[in-house]
Amino acid sequence: MNLFETFSARISRALTQLADRGDIPAGLSFARVVVEPTRDPAHGDLAINAAMVLAKEAGTNPRALAALLVEELARDPDVAKAEIAGPGFINLTLQPAVFTGILKSAIEAGLDHGRGALRPDPKINVEYVSANPTGPMHVGHGRGAVFGDALSSLLAFAGHAVSREYYINDAGAQVDVLARSAFLRYREALGEEIGAIPEGLYPGDYLKSVGESLAKTYGESLRGKPESAWLVAVRAAAIDGMMAMIRDDLAALGVVHDVFFSERSLQAVDGNIDAVRETIEDLRSRDLIYEGRLPPPKGQKDEDWEDREQTLFRATLFGDDVDRPLLKSDGSYTYFANDIAYHRSKFVRGFAEMIDVWGADHGGYVKRMAAAVKAVTHGEGSLDVKLCQLVRLLRNGEQVRMSKRSGDFVTLREVIDEVGRDAVRFMMIFRKNDATLDFDLAKVVEQSKDNPVFYVQYAHARCASIFRQAREAFPGIDLSPTVLAQADLSRLTDEAEIGIIKMIAAYPRMIDAAASAHEPHRVAFFVHELASAFHSLWNKGKDSPQLRFVNQTDRESTVARLAFVHAVRSVLASGLAVVGVAAPEEMR
Image 1 (tube, rainbow, N blue to C red):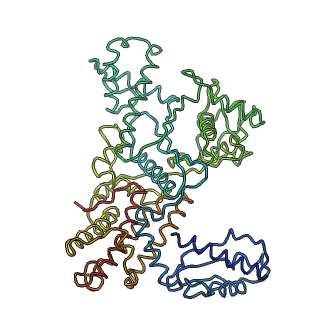
Image 2: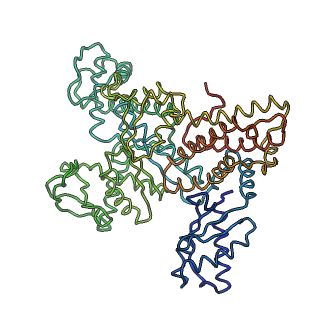
């Protein structure tokens, strides 16, 4: 049950009744009417803006309209009090039975409390990570991976169909550099002394395994041959090796993609249709391509800019600052041309709604890509780009910089191996994606309330321990959700208990809002706040025996509180599942 959806429907009915009586004009749109929690619990449970947003169209003032609406809402048996606040807001205080009813619903729903019904909307494409296949992933990639994966899970939980996609950048000059680096390691595997890695090649030890694999496959047959004779084969083997490593690292983080899309598949190689040329011709047929010159970019480097007449996309028609080049002087495609074709392919594959997760260093690319999506989808597609800011890796407050494995950065896998998947995932999502994140390797393994992931998991484990304690106190007791939902929940009257029940009631609304805003960090914030409230209630029971969850002398109160704990545990487990973190029964 979604309390806020329920009362939104009731507000709409009340407004319709006012229109039917002639108190307000018929045909008003209620789209801007919002039902939300009051900012101060002392002012009630729900705040409604209906009178504020409809008064002008209704030909009256907000307080006059609010008075009509309050009179109508006061008749609702679930409303204990309806009041006008300020210039015309309406605050509702609900009957206690409303919240016990929601608690019962949450107990019965279990992990499905807050889950949205499957929507008829088209499938959403979420593209994330998409790290160049030239080496192991670093912690910055990890942040994008966790964000994209948690966002995908959040959207799916809210009822959307989602496809998780990784774009393999396997068509640029960087993969030729990778091939040359791997060929050097191939020679090393054959026993050559290669010395220091030349400037411009990838120096990390991670390519040694690729070189060994090449030596095993080709033996001496490639040594001494010109680059043209081995580049294609070595490049393919190196990309395969790097992608296997990346997939393995992602699996260690609990990230699994539905689709790995190759950039090379868009070009006229290996028997492919040239989708980039096809895209350019489509834009040209609609007069969105022309030949012209561009001024140099102001204040920033643009690798696609050249001081010559060139083929340009009319990006300014779709909100970009300047038009954009699609072909380089040698006739090859710019990175942007490939990216336009790639996003066109998403639309052709049925994804009108696209979400891209990028590193913050790509922020200057957002406008042009949004313009491109508008153009290639004839305005029918949408693109939301979520930028993930940098991660500063610390140990006891000191920055950690180097890695033997990669040569110049700490790899994501090294961090996962040291602190564990749960710590990495929760801390990556426990800060809004557009804010810089300080990740302290020592802090995230502390077993204290200052460590957010421990604090939330400990709350879930405490819930489980209460059930173990109850089974010891009452041997053979039936604690199934069906039985717990029938408990006398009116016994839950303490202010702290009521506060937590209201949080449980707010969970479905939070899920909807977080999914609509594409902000999975809200889920992590919510479960942390719920865990904090639960720990406080636990501590309150130390001084107030009547609040203890298990009371051997009062079976009915015990069952009621166990029903309450079951709902808390379910919401904690649900929220942790959305962000991809385990909900342990015990903390070790």
